[in-house]
Figure 1 (cartoon, rainbow, N blue to C red):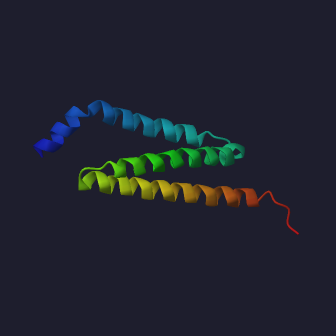
Figure 2: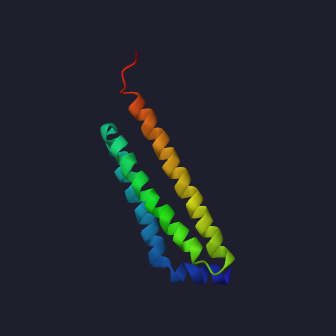
Figure 3: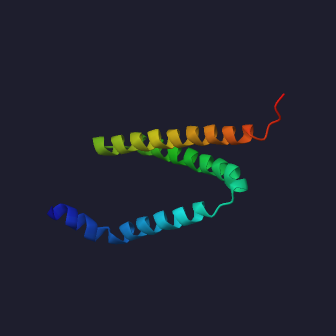
Length: 100
């Protein structure tokens, strides 16, 4: 219990920043017009590609099991985000194609 409190007090600014980023992200995404969702998804896919590369680099330089596991989880979630983003973008673009 004492180690958790020490962790929280040592990283209080990072926790505040994380909570602020969550609220700002939700507020920004909720005000994006539907016309801009496809370009926004393409940009998010590019960003998640960079996240995957960074996570692979972290995994390559891992010295303990925790770093390796966290790197693997980051690669897994980043890959799921990229694939899901491409699927959603493809479905949205399918709505604008002419049907035979």
